[in-house]
Image: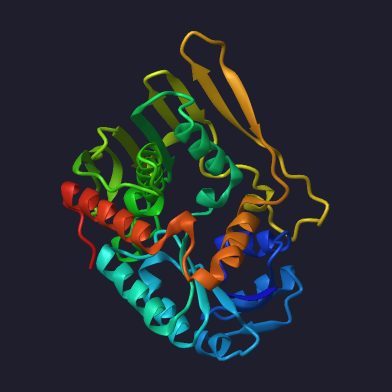
Length: 346
């Protein structure tokens, strides 16, 4: 059983702490926050005895096997490197870094200290993704030709908010655009019998606001196997979360690609251990046939699957859901997207 520590005590930390309640491989041991009172408040929700006011203290705790780093993305690099040097295995919130250069430093730290490292793309760990890949590779829709994937939301403009503040890593591309970018790379890879592919062509357009971050944007990608993709993201426009894969013999839709089967996402307190987890559904429409609903049964929360992905592959030091090369490739894709729009961070 993996003893987890959480670094950062915001809302996503609460979601992950809830997910650990249903994990088959891990349990929550300690919480740390540099903001006075936040570690205590989160620890009280989940009856966690150990709470720390510094990252150094939680990393010095010999009972901690792995840490989940849930700070905002501009504040990922320091605790990741600290955790690696302390010999702790690491799950770090998406996007793993502000750019590919930072991500490479994290991978180097994990390799040098022989610890596990994974970017927390929780959707990649859910059984519906394994089913999606299986259908693609079994030829359920023939040859994959085009992929469309979106993730965006409308946050009222506030230049000081996390969504719009450049110093806080604001903008849609880094916050949620990383999801569709990673999804289309996954689908293109699945079509080629690989875990992922990186694009060989990339073009983007969008709107950058007065604080210097992207408000809404779309991009098109082409891969070496001639799969073409369209992705979109926003912090100033509601975009329905969706992924649709168009093939030569049919269409495969993932209606809820990012947050399937996750009561933990909306829970404000510790969920009961008998909480039911709804199945997810894929929609398969083969040419000339009636649409078919494919149900994917689950037995735990989305974020429980994420924790258990770490547990299943901790000895390998990286997991197929988000390998180091995959993570670096996705960050390079995001770097290109940002550069296309002229977005630069300090």
